[in-house]
Image 1 (cartoon, helix red, strand yellow):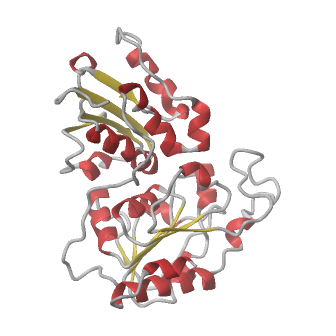
Image 2 (cartoon, one colour):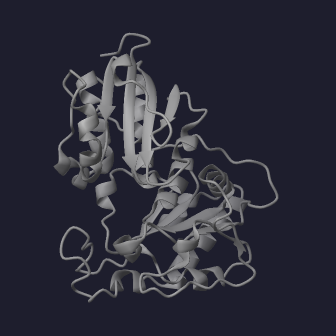
Length: 320
């Protein structure tokens, strides 16, 4: 069933960069069904809305830090907010005067993308063939980043979330001549509190770029290596070969991943432990990440870089 042409819907997204990126298939299917979508974003980091600018799937973008549209001005309102953030915003919808559909919380923890897409079902959208998550960020011609550049995103959220940080990014950087470092200053701190130190050959953009500028750096790269983090999912969404390093957190709960994404994890019997007894088997050492070797990541990076600069070579071979 298609929506009447021009029927409007407000889509409220929240939480981390990665959560919002994984929600973009919802915007795609709404557009396919004929809806005109505006997006309200309450993100953990500033500038997330800029990642959606210029995209035909979105008419207007509202940053919840500065402005909030009137809910009553829309034919439909979708509050596709993760369960762990819903209490922050539930009261805003109490006086809406119409039913507000909430996808099952359990679905979020099984398949996050399916959770967001479930909000399109009551509007009659076809979600039987989910699209890849996507951001409208294209490569730009510049002399800073190119097909031989390895971009490293060594961070993620702070606190307990820092357990997702692979500790050997500096050692990986030492194996390559063309390396760019992105993220925030905090991203350079390992879970054990020690500081990552990179050689002077590494070009660091840490703390110097907006999120949109960071996205353009990523879009120009030959390959990106990241933890399970927002910048890693951003890289996947712009189509760059992306190696995501997983340990305590599950990757299957993210849902379908684009073909440009490769998951590396050790596969210990105790992982993932994020939704169980966190770090219990290794006494907080996060052994699953410690045991992903620099050599295996290095070999995969070299394969992707070679594929990006060699005509006729498919990057698909790097995943086998």
